[in-house]
Length: 99
Image 1 (cartoon, rainbow, N blue to C red):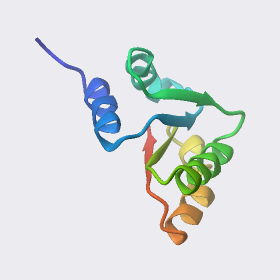
Image 2 (cartoon, rainbow, N blue to C red; image 1 turned 90 degrees about the vertical axis):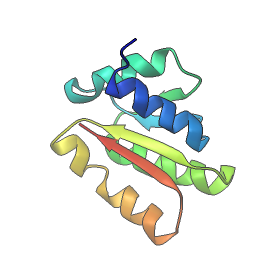
Image 3 (cartoon, helix red, strand yellow; image 1 turned 120 degrees about the vertical axis):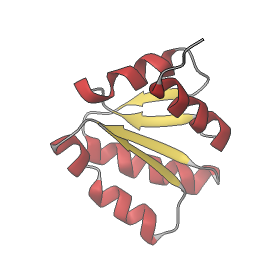
Image 4 (tube, rainbow, N blue to C red; image 1 turned 135 degrees about the vertical axis):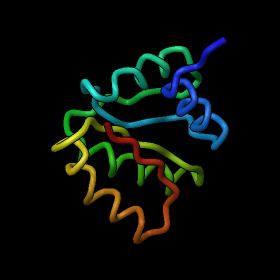
């Protein structure tokens, strides 16, 4: 049986205890969204990638568990930076996935 890289990424998130991922679908990350459909990790759709990174950081702070955010390549990835830097400064556990 073959397993896709996107399935491995989702399994890794489950092992980390991540139960929510914040993000916006894009061409480069659609396979991960396909794998998330069949997992226990719930997705939260956002209107802007920066919101995804701040939501993931806030959730990690409140829930005391790792969180995740996802964005497509290029501008989607760069829009995550401010929220990721904030989470890093506050030592919040966050997995960041980009295409």
